[in-house]
Image (cartoon, rainbow, N blue to C red; front, side, top):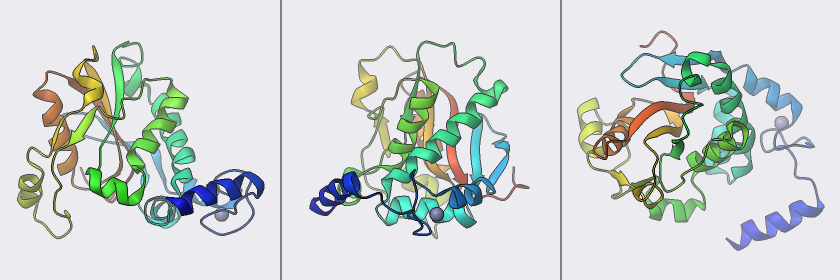
Length: 228
Ligand SMILES: [Zn+2]
């Protein structure tokens, strides 16, 4: 915490270098790294088929992977700003995705929450920061506490599809931001889309409360383009 505070104070006086290549940068990422990240973008935001439309901005590889790792594990939450911006830009340009939604006054944006202990350790929830940046561009209301993670789940890595599903069963419930709200439709934001088990569990939590999930947005996927 203290380290973050001093870093923030220092950043007021000294421009921090790009967290990916350490070159001087005027924005969160230098122009070179921005260009490298844009190369990881999927054609017009890859939409995977499924019950609920899923929009993924890029492939989890190269500079995009580096940026996400820097954001999550090397204490560079500021990287969420440009990533969320690009996600919003793609969403706004994907007319079939947003045309029916954007005029819906009761559509809100909800990030996938982290278990509170884990978030305390990291100091932030990257999905929330991405969602915040996304909302700054789209103007949609952000409900950071729209969903609550009620129990910690084992790391998903190395589990079979069925084990993942069991692991996440009842992991979420409606959070305090939506309990009193009139919102009837949500967009879920997550950082990385892998098997979709987490998203499925989140969708289930909303369905139980008769809230429609209008779409799922993720900045990157580990799935290959040929996957369904
Ligand atoms: Zn750079």
